[in-house]
Amino acid sequence: MKDFLNKIFTINIYIVLIAGLSFFGVYKYVEYRFDIVSRESAQANEKIAKLEKLLEGTESNVASVLQGEQAKSDSLLSQFDEVKDTVGELSKLSKTDPELLKKYSKVYFLNEHYVPVSLSDVGVDYISNKSKNYQVQTDALPFLEKMIEANKNNDMSLLVLSAYRSFQTQATLKSNYKITYGAGANKFSADQGYSEHQLGTAIDFTTQKTNGVLDGFEKTEEYQWLLGNAYKYGFVISYPKGNTYYKFEPWHWRFVGVKLATKLHEDKINFYDLDQRSIDNYLINLFD
View 1 (cartoon, one colour):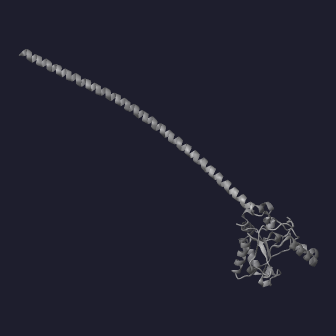
View 2 (cartoon, rainbow, N blue to C red):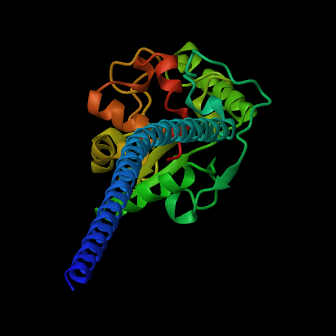
């Protein structure tokens, strides 16, 4: 019996030992696998951190590249707009007669073949002698008519007495003046080729108050109105008091464009006081 009990005890010890060894083995295995997983996890985290850092740098580089490309694109668009504007201005200038802003009266010369590209009839309501046909440079005509309408709205009667004259017409007119006034004609009448009227942008005004003639125009309210308002419609007086070209002609006004006329009015200077280079800068805005 005692021997049997000893065997049983021995067997139990073996079982306990085997169980202990098995548990220890399992524990060590689990510990081993845990170490492996931990190392792999740490390596994975390290790789992830590196990738994140790399991506951060990549995002920064990509953003920088994109910004650089956007700047190039903006610059090209800006250059394109500038070129487009320049082409537009050149096209506009090419369609504008450069003679229209030249200083003629004893300065520049228009030959006998010069005729404005386009002339249009002044409406019968805007002329003094209803039996005559007066013409003005086509693009300047709307400005003239608006000015006369504005004058009428102020209960005045500004009227056109003379407009476009050809080279031949001016030659005949000057010849007749010479017969009547001799050399004195040069003080108030231009030779053919030097008259602003040949451009189709110069107007001689009169009013019903002077019975449709030039004499006495200086004393009319229409003249005073022109002095304060003509620039708004692009017109300036060519030969004011004190000019060195011809005698004072309060009735003679020339279309030079609103922008240039406004500058001359604000600076209180005469068209012929500006140098030609400065005047030419306003050609592009002549009919704006």
